[in-house]
Length: 363
Image (cartoon, rainbow, N blue to C red; front, side, top):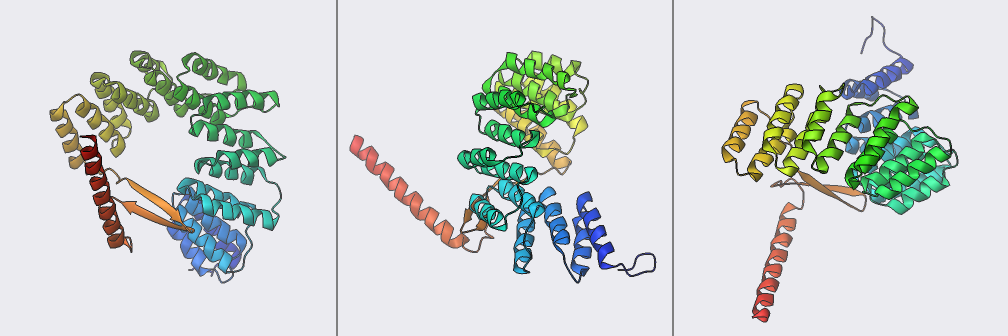
């Protein structure tokens, strides 16, 4: 590759690799990466981080394995990306292995790494180890505290979230906008309307301007409590009434409570802002289906087809001995799909026989 008539040096190619990786252009960054004769830890970290930040966690993990095979020792930046990837994919065993390597490498106690590790354990539903990492982190800051608070919030542990928030402030740490988002989400799950309003109002005391997600959290809080009109009025009066997240939250609340009239209003506004969001079309369709409005369901499906909008298929995965096995509906790409189907059929037959035997015994 030639730049302005001169062949780029290894240093320049590494810099360009980092630039493109950070901007999300992984295709171009990979070109520079492959062209490097001497791949340094910096170049490996840039590629791994770029993949993880752009939703290609499995590719990032594969690059990490290649890096290790090339004899490089991971540093704090490697571990930060690695833990985020493991957390997103819920790969607890691989995350634990990485944690062990972190300890062996004697990486200096780092806030970013500790926060990513805490987040990984909580996303993998290992609350005890997440709390342990936090307890052993000596140089805590608001990021570390927020990782812990968000972790408990993800599991609906509302009391712990509010107590940790109080403790964090008691130790002199100022909450940031992510901390408040975690607290508001916890209030929503706990149905704590009054507390939610108090926390939302107190953001200005810390010089924090509420963002779209904060308003959406308040809409979700009111919506879950069945206060749909209040939620609608809140959206209309907010300075971010043209933020898609608030209308999306209102649409979700309307589906839960079966208010198809308000759902139509919320959906119309949401699709003006995000016309290609397949998930919300499905939410609206389900809201109509729950009320038996099949003509409207058909209409929504027709709009999706006309706009060529496809809902991403649901999938699940399982980690076995460090390998991730991904499964989609009616997908036969797994190398052992025939064996799996045969075993599922066998198990289904056994369960059916057991149910029949149970019904006979009851009679």
